[in-house]
Length: 233
Image 1 (cartoon, helix red, strand yellow):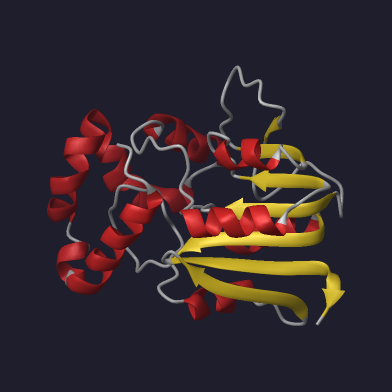
Image 2 (spheres, rainbow, N blue to C red):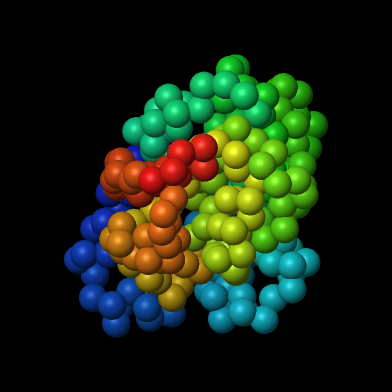
């Protein structure tokens, strides 16, 4: 399924605002639109949120391998967010956390030295990007390793939001850019989201920027958030 993010963001808005929660959370209703796309992997989607709290790191990665290719698009980024990231990261050493198929990493590698990390990495890539397989909660890099770190459409998926955010901040000596969807909670859906941010403040309450220099905006229906470790607020 290859709907671009710009279109799916509009669909999500309609479902969030027009669909009653009782219907949105019903397993039978979710099956109606998950099964035609996921087919034999439908149960993996329907059961994911119930299983996730007890998953080991190995089981979590296995769940992503099992569902790989169902929502098969180059990137989850919409165009305004992608443009903002490219404008903000113009050089130096950059880490793309949760790089997926490498669409953004490849674009940034035209002007930056890019390392791309994910729990499942693509094979046979020759795109000038340094690929690393690793966990978001324990990034395999020293403190202050990167001039820029980008984490787009990842934190809605993670088991430990606070640990992942702490790791992102730890390895950043410059700009940290995070993109998350603005979406209401779903019990069953064609994604593996565990954290939901229906409005920007829901993310900020979790991120707790405190005295860190930060800014945010809503771009194409998603939240674009930026911190700068090199600046004091």
